[in-house]
Amino acid sequence: MDLYFQSKGEGVPIIFVHGFSLDSRMWDPQVEILSKTNQVITYDMRGFGKSPLPTGPYTHHDNLHDLVTSLNLSKFHLVGLSLGGEVALDYVLTNPDTVLTLTLADSSLGGYASSVNWQVYAKEQGLEKAKENWLNHPVFDSVKSNPKIFSRLKQMVSDYSGWHWLNHDPWIKLIPPAIDRLGEIKLPTQILVGDKDLDYYHTIADTLADKIINSNLEYIGNSGHMVNLENEVEFNYIISKFIKQH
Image 1 (spheres, rainbow, N blue to C red):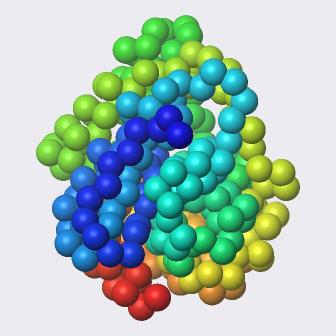
Image 2 (image 1 turned 90 degrees about the vertical axis):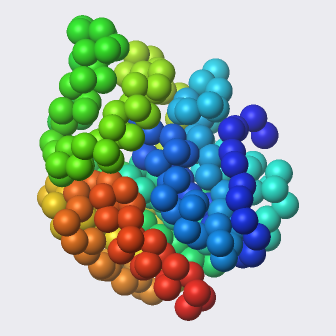
């Protein structure tokens, strides 16, 4: 297992999966609070943070499985935001017996056609300009209203290699995709979305809530896409309450 990870605290484990262009540092506010009651595990997905770049075909959910196996975890809670939510979904669909609860925050969804233009034009304009374009994307409009939080986001994007913008990503997607298999998910699932996030993510949240049988949808106030940073108090409260119930 070659992925970078950190573990803090003791108790029933919680694994957090980060968003695109970011890394495990985005979960620092959750680690600080939840590690008081649980073992909190954060990691950098392949191609992000301190983990190695892809060198051939891979799947994020299998990489997560390798991490779980290396840590000898039998049962744990799983939390993902944005791309991390998509990876968490794929993991649950391929390893349904290891996860106690699933939390999906402003999640993307495998097989869901994107209505958003994600182009940053790295090849045409260069990596630094691409990062500037990315930070100016509407998905981050809300977080800009808090300079301290935006500075944290900006640092992670600055440290991002940009590899996925400049190369073909050999990530092998789940087939059939998660969107066609949501009815298979039986475990308790908490769906969260920032009230100011893009309509695209609200539509996905509605789809998840409709198709996942044992699910609950809540809106995080005064937040856009980065709900765990923009309203960390409410986010931490909901997560803590949810996992204690299960």
